[in-house]
Length: 115
Image (cartoon, rainbow, N blue to C red; front, side):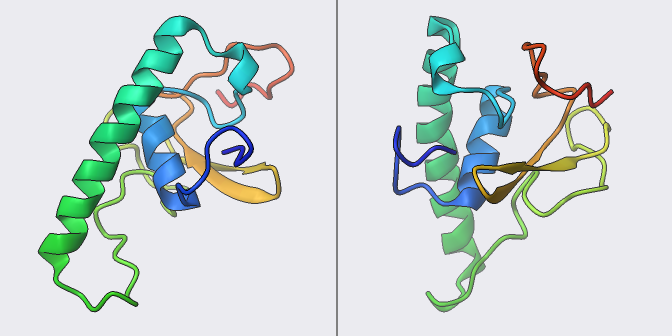
């Protein structure tokens, strides 16, 4: 979610990309292992392509934000479509990020234990 590392991806798709990659939204770029970076890279390509397809299927005017296909964004309190765990919202760099605490676990001690 840090625009200094990668920009031009909005908050909604950032949430979806991190969810697809299984990366917690508060993970620092410097904490990513090589396998995390590879999953993130692949997720960016896959989620953006999927999003383009879903928005095109909706056939809405360009000014309409099509969000009904999203898996975690704005789903706080609802069940994760993968594991059933409650979706959470957390602040990251002044923005809201939505995530599944089971599918996107944190591995660093300074994170709150969401379980």
